[in-house]
Image 1 (cartoon, one colour):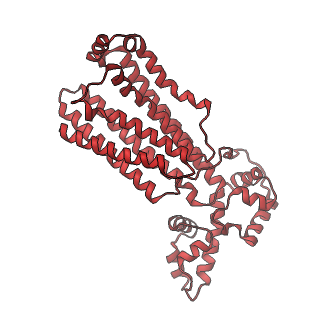
Image 2 (image 1 turned 90 degrees about the vertical axis):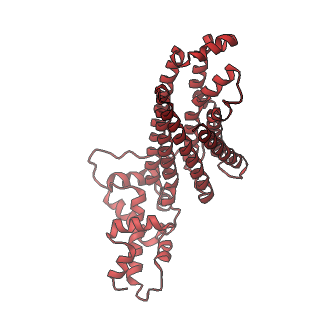
Image 3 (image 1 turned 180 degrees about the vertical axis):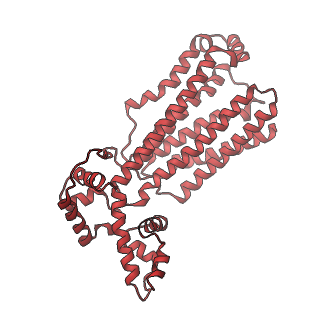
Length: 370
């Protein structure tokens, strides 16, 4: 089984290095995102490299300890990467140095009895590694760190989705959200496998621990392969939003609806058809209506109790239904109608159509006799 672990480690590290090279060299407007995820992969490579060299090379004790503890940088790097994906104007600032604190804290804890000790004492420290108070504390701190950062990642993902549906009418704007949800799901699964693997080191049956390592490395290979495919097939995945765009809190108080303004907005949209622009945002619509963005957002979210995303798609689907109903010759394909009414992807169009018409576009066309 040792050979299998080494082979899987080699494959994972090779794929990760190739993808890291790609991330550092590919021309892109989102270079910071690429650098952050590349650094995350480099830290992971360093963490897993032990499976390759442990039988052939003995590192100095202080380097081996640094290799083990560099994993404390993974959660901060992933968090910063997610922020850079979500927000188009994200930049690294001095304040982000705070994310180095957990790693520096760990080094500080190990400083008196390990890093300031001589080599003989460092080797003795490793002999009783898992029973050392410092290591027990660091393990506890690592678990808290992982849970805290994962909670922060989920919070920002939920907030990002809320902002998107309140400010954008293009379903592709949610691609970042779906990507991050998928990424977090896979990383959480790998984290659970890693936790099980760490727990099994206390099991006298070494085969269980080796099996957990194989599963972890196999999952890592699938993960990096999946990320590479995402990069190849979705090169425009990462667009982001401006960080100064905020979500609007829906009021819980019963306020009288501004019916006149709502009717004016609906009449304008029906006549001018701004929804035909697939990239329509609440800001661009507010500019056309000559009203503040916040007022328009409040009307849609509070008075109409819906989101801008759904509000605009309702007009698009109505237009699509009219085109399908009036196209007696069947000269327009459903795909052409989809593009004509402001959608740029089949799946969101079908989903929105079924939501409003309770039928698929094909079923609706057949029901009208066209």
